[in-house]
Image 1: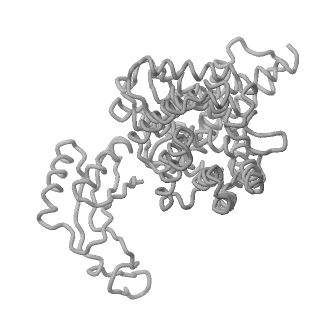
Image 2: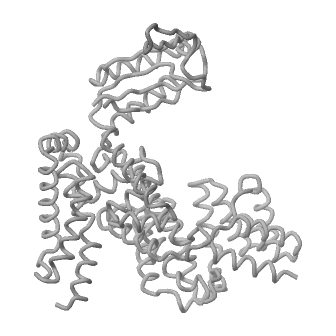
Image 3: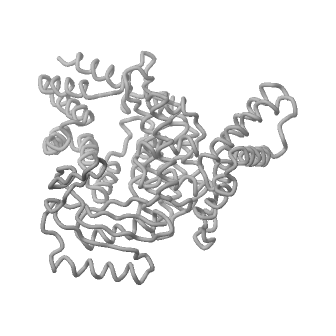
Length: 410
Length: 107
């Protein structure tokens, strides 16, 4: 096996096995710290040994065994074995009846613990990327434009709270499951959105590493909870957005809006996969949640070969459905934009005007308003709205696009 | 595992007889479920005295140690196997006393 092949095998093992190794060790030793450190050591050992010894037949088994040995070494070294094991029994005396059959996977316990609602949202994101995603502290710090020390502190504090407050290492009971799943999906969507619309003036406008990681975690969750509609919905949503990634930013680093994108550059495989998931959910006949509806809206967009073929009445109907489920001003704004396509900009403006107070600090509000006013030929007002949108937008590609649009106003 | 569930309050005359009825029901539930350790309602912050016994002679100061808009007006000490159970009980307690509560583990 060539060094490149071994390198690829290690990368693959890291992607496929990291979460399982951490989860299995957490279960065994009852301690996230011990699990994380031992998993990292096991992968470091693989990097050292696999090029000479060859890639083991069962990389996951090899890594888990190695990590377990590392953890025992550490515990012996620290001479705290009795303590740790007592703690393990104390913390994770899990009743097998808690488990949910097909979804009973150590990794699922790990995901629910990292996304526990008693942890702050930023801590959940950081902890999930580290413990489940296997990203290193410097990688996560870079992704969120944070100092490494501050990010490490955030993770340490979250782990300390899990231990001190005894956040359980468990898949929630059936009653609590929907709420807790939506907490996990929220974390994954945050990661995806930070990649999709990277904030910060110095970063790439699209952070493919983050969108890819969010999709990878959503795929994992989907494999673990295949019957959950919202998990399927979020994965479909991410796939259908990701499919348009390369068409979304021009060669000069400017945002390209949906109506101007080269639809031939969309990723047909991702679109097909996203559409399959949306159809699968439709076939169940169960009422969809927010992610399923958002995925369906994106399915409508990605079904049109040309923007003029877009079925706007379908888009509006889906936004109506979303508004009933989640009456928020942001949903109402997106619905207004769709109505503008169906019934004209004057109708849309009347709706948008009513949202002004609630969305006065939201850049997308002014983007929508500027575009509607432009279409109505009200250049001066449109220019003011573009100015406001530019001042509030954090994404470099979007700023470039808005500036050009503003400067094109007659 | 024990948790302190503190009642966060901003009205000085909490714990009226009307308010005590649902709290009594909640307490009975805690006792029945084996979660009860101890609970109590506290006097208003204006009834507090700060004591500093670190020096040769103890110093007494009228009033709470910090003037705040919100304060502790009561608490439960509960027994729960993990935070999920503690949070569920705390949510029911918050509903019963109609105040926000803070949950903190004992060391």
